[in-house]
Length: 434
Image (cartoon, rainbow, N blue to C red; front, side, top):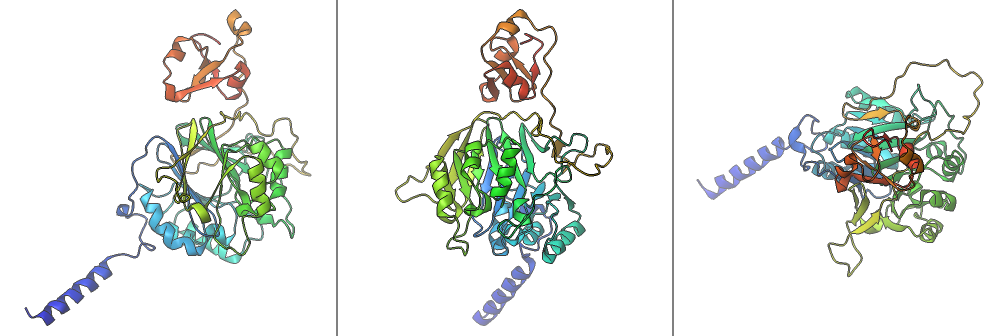
């Protein structure tokens, strides 16, 4: 065959190869070969993606359940449709859009075409732009269920919690419509931002607070309602603008590390110097996606290990930052003792219809603290020491109980008092009746 014929044959083969290679942004969700993630490793992973001026984060639970929190601006589509398949072994279980701003949902259509999803949660706020409504309609048309955050109708004082398995839960702190009215917006605080979804991811003694674009008005309201926002790591609200991340809020959160999702040289000049000063005063280690690139957080239930994509010059390439968890935050009833806002005509009680995001994710109702067990021993009445429990069991023990001795170190939880153990939702073990 002549060199000219060989050249023509090579050109034809190249054209055929291009035609048969699908565009990754239009690949069908059923094509399993798109996924290149590894099997779950028994730890909780959170990836804060570098998407420029916007927000996007992926939660991967110890058993492999996945939640995508926002999808960044449209300009991030190319990056996410390549990065997400490296972390997933199946389609997304749940997507949460914190509010209808383009820098939080602009890349979603391309992302869903690439990796698919089973369910989407969004706050259903009034005045959403037409393109956002069009996006939701298209998503629903693909068979993805669209739901909104809401407290359980049977226990309206309790928060909505999504169970990710193996002791990992995602608690929706705000908004709480229709149980509580949305916060009013203004020129300084748009309704979409002050009612942005705020949620707390917890695993053992560690937790991550996602603040969306919530502003100072949202923070003030949560503090007034005494919502437990204590967390090991804070995803800073509103990209670090000065109108969020107030000093009182930081004091209540008590975070040891924070991630600011922000684009370099952005028009908002975020993060604001005032916000960085408040974080510094609170002794919070700050990671920025415009400086540090993608930030990965891994938890074993006892501590968080933070790994930035880029390190300062001179830092060893294997540098990691470890932050010890603050202990499990009691979550009996976030709004107990706080009267709900009055309503002119409260609706009649509705039958329970708690949201079930997906088969592997289950919303649960937070139950009140367990009652004191009857027939307590004299020892349990006089005992002043610590109590122990397993992360995988709903009972607590004296440290010298037979049941306590069977708890593996990696699953061990300690409580300073009996009341603290009860507030965690656990009950006294019958083998020693603590």
